[in-house]
Image (cartoon, rainbow, N blue to C red):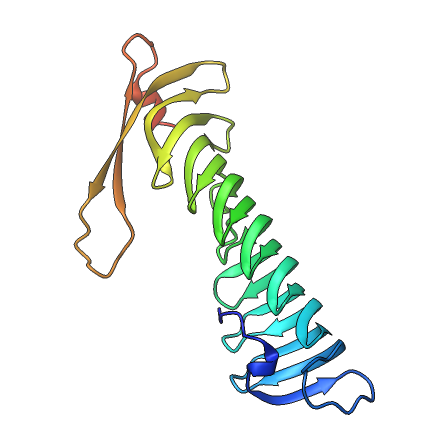
Length: 226
């Protein structure tokens, strides 16, 4: 997505069209609705106050992204929806041009995150739903990663504990629909990736149940497909 544009007064226009019969050809000090076409092929249509994008507006980015919502002092700020050409769609709160506050992001594969954001990243309480499996991650996020909470399976069974790399790690508990629970520990092992261009982590997870419980690791492994 294109970066936020600077003040319109200092940005190269192809054309500025004020609403109505006004004859102004620039947004300088302009208040009202108007349309600005920029030299980089981006288009803004919406409200201006004193020459800046303030209020409701629509911004078409050169890469095909489309934003509709609130602006303050030329940047996305308030409530708005940004439809990315290739990355999905976000609807929610914005601050200083970034996703900040509460919002919903729907990804191209129909996965969905609903919760809190800080400076463009998932941060705080939120829920991630996997469209293909129906599994959910419900709990706390930090710096775009799930760090603690519940991994909920479609059948109602869930794991509660700590997470690393968006996967269970360290001490946690499995809860089953019949009321049984299994306490134990997940250990993660990073498997070296032979493909230098593939940045996705290959992670092997091993679960060990506490010895005093009658449920064993096989019971847990039979339920998990993460």
